[in-house]
Length: 103
Image (cartoon, rainbow, N blue to C red; front, top):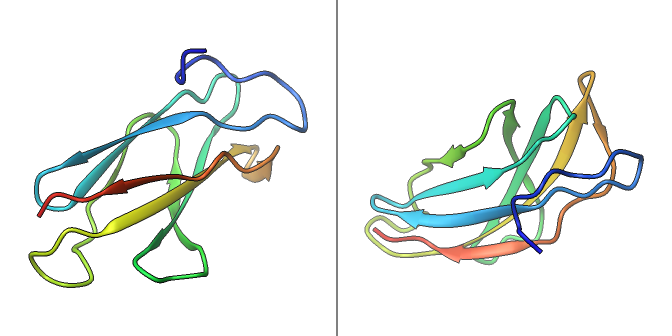
């Protein structure tokens, strides 16, 4: 299955996306929103156990350009996405994917 195929309609829709580590600790998140308004992006890094809301993106890609927790060091970041329709989250959360940043 292509990770960037259009999502199915309905209440149980779950986003698919891909991560790419880029220089300067940036992470590029590519997604397909299909018929939904956009995507809600959440992340964890390092030993965090709670999810941090990063934003809502209406067009792929989303760029996470936060500096690392420890300057100049790579870190593991985990992400999950959820569809947005009419300003409300809908469907299920995506699978959690992780990537290690490049300082």
